[in-house]
Amino acid sequence: MLVRIRGGKDGIAEYLRDGMKSDRVQHRDELDKRICIDGDLSLTDSIIKDMAKTDKPENYLHITLSFAERDINEEKIREVYEDYKNNLMSAYQSEEYNVYAEIHQPKVKSYIDKSTEETVERFPHVHIVIPKMSLLDGKDLNPRGCLH
Image 1 (tube, rainbow, N blue to C red):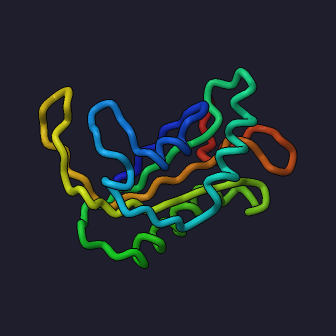
Image 2 (tube, rainbow, N blue to C red):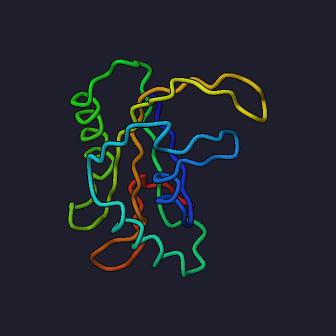
């Protein structure tokens, strides 16, 4: 499994719903079967949009868990996600944070990158979104424990 951690200010809900990137033309519904496994995207988006009104450069973590196995089943992906989330958020109680996660099972197994003209292979993956704000006191949430 490969884990990629990024962050952003706003726009993650639109990306998850639409799937548009500059290097491809397909819409999310053409690319993937989306399976929500945790949280509510509208609620997570609402929290992030409220945070985006501030001058903070990063309002959420966007974590992608990517699998090398094309035939990994949904149950195993859910199990891996739960283990990852429980370890990542071990310093917090569940009522302190919001999380949204969805599995993407690729319908399109590969595509040609418009900018490089290379074939991009696609595998099952999980998108995890965690707003970087405590729901209890509004302070910063820092599950990775990194200094910025």
